[in-house]
Length: 192
Image (cartoon, rainbow, N blue to C red; front, side, top):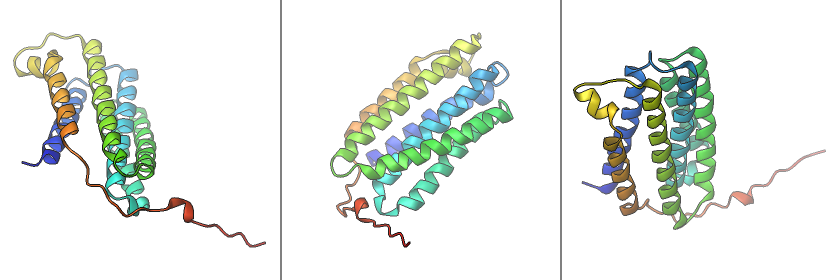
């Protein structure tokens, strides 16, 4: 199996892990934690998705920007949905902003630095999502039994999944597109 597919599966699992915590324990999360989680998830996922997609398709800047803004906004909206309408709005706006910033960042980086940028984005995303998980655990402070105890009561399983994603991110390299796009060549003409 290709390393890129393994990496994608690992990050989908990490994201589902955090989302499932929000949906399962929404009644135990405070309003402020819910807003913070929607904003964090929207921003982090929009930023990482936009950066990687823009690095893969730098010649399609407009389309990548719109798609990454919509993706980040959708993820932030889903994260805020179980909490409140204010959390939905917070997640939507943070996700749209993160997607736009990620697309701009991904297009600006060229050559071999794209792989370094991907590693940095994966480290930041995984780290922030793990800190968010720790915040959820400290907020809920509950006694769990069975499978919920393994997935939501302990920190080690998610931590190991994130470490595994870090490992595979260093084994994988994005395809480098050699079509250099000169973004500075655009000229604006103003007629008076």
